[in-house]
Length: 152
Ligand code: FES
Image (spheres, rainbow, N blue to C red):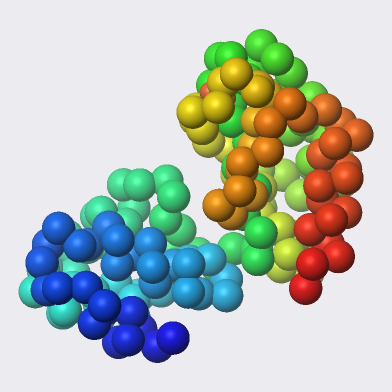
């Protein structure tokens, strides 16, 4: 779907800014918003570019830099932390060979931290793109990453 086709799904209302940015980012193979995306959104909704840029940088779900095909977000809020999120983080860094905020050289994975994902009952938890995974341990994490590597 082109950038224009995405925007035209939404009425020209400022209420749709976040939804348009999400849609544009989801449509991008590299999970980010380009300057062109921000400018086109600003033009479409008749906002100043600086306003749209400000919104895109305020929310951690948006990235202005290219990321991997799979964006992994590890919950670092206290309940997950108490249930071993740091072990999960260490395991992911070891398996992927990158640190937080980094992308694997094959552009398959980007590792990020996040706050509560709203599934504290299954802590520790992480999210890969739109899917949430809970009750994690080192073995389960390795299994999930292997599954993701097989998906093309
Ligand atoms: S604290 Fe991790 S999901 Fe709520």
